[in-house]
Image 1 (cartoon, rainbow, N blue to C red):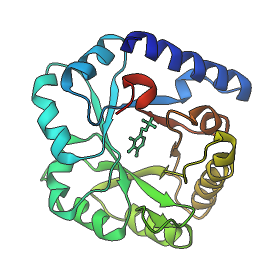
Image 2: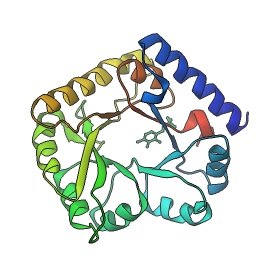
Image 3: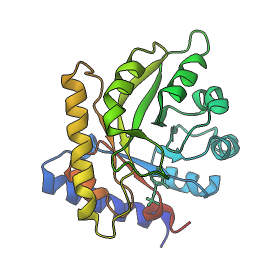
Amino acid sequence: MGIRESICGVEERIAAACARSGRRREDVRLVAISKTFPAERVREAYEAGLREFGENRVQEAALKRPALADLDIAWHLVGHLQTNKARHARELFQLVQSVDSLRIADKLDQAASPGAGPQPVLLEVNLAGEEQKSGARETEAEEIADRVSRLVNLDLRGLMLIPPYCENPNDARPYFHRLRKLAEKLRAAGLPGIHELSMGMSHDFEAAIEEGATIIRVGTAIFGPR
Ligand SMILES: *Cc1c(COP(=O)(O)O)cnc(C)c1O
């Protein structure tokens, strides 16, 4: 199956999930995660209509970009960011979804070049407290979000979640629900800008949409297995 057909399949699944949950298609952004795939595949997906792409490594994104410079793409960073790559990340990504600590938020804030607007970011939350994964713990999310929101060179727009892998996507649903509740709590606590919920990947994005995702990150279902 070609990329165009795969995207059609993904769009059908998105439409069905939106219909089931009474949501509008335009309220869910599809970000195609192109990590490990070459620039030519990104171009094919672009030609099939996609405009937002995500990478998990700064280096890999930087290597791919020159071959795609003629395309009007919004790039997202979805993987852990090292402090020494903060400046580079600001140059490359329209949305850094993976701010996972105050330390990296500070570095990104300090890496602003004069005159550039605030960098849009999401706070990644590790709801299950998995040791091997990055992300702020639920208990510290409010304090970190509050402090990140005060950094003038960052624009905190919402939360990102990578839940524990669940064979059955319905088992991830409680995590999606909790992320939404956490965003509501943060808004009520005086952070009205927290409205994006980045959650849902190839095997579970329908459940995520039904629980309120505004951004889904889909790799395998578009580009095939890595
Ligand atoms: C790779 C990746 C995805 C896409 O995963 P698929 O299962 O291939 O859809 C989504 N989010 C993050 C953070 C990733 O690293």
